[in-house]
Length: 172
Image 1 (tube, one colour):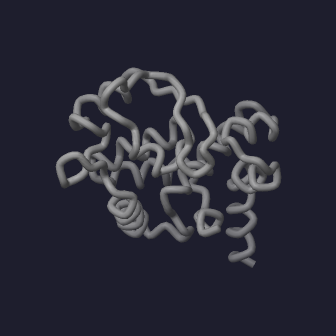
Image 2 (tube, rainbow, N blue to C red):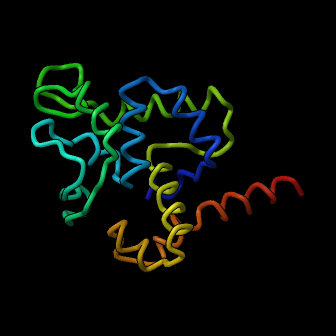
């Protein structure tokens, strides 16, 4: 349940974190923001057959999920991809580790003294809030995120409201 403790970021905070990340980690986070992928799924993207849209199997749930990448993002990924993985690690044949991306996200959020608990899963909440704003339909957001429970989806899709309520509580 640790994922539920990470918090939402406003767009200006997302922009700041992105600007402070190492280039490869910035690409990974951009993939997460664009697709709603979990970090582990983004890291397991293979180089071979890397296309702008398709289906992948989520590591956490085993469910199939659709993704789409805009051409500029896809081209940037291809430009740095390794022979096996879209986001290669330090050792040949391995992908980047979750820990390395997580540590960079934490470093970037500390650099801007962000008060909320920022982690890789914060990006999935940003994605969910964007979907909720676009569709206004919790069930559509739930299906897109492959959640089995609408109550979990509500936490994600309304993360901006929860953060605002928390911040207002600090001021009083």
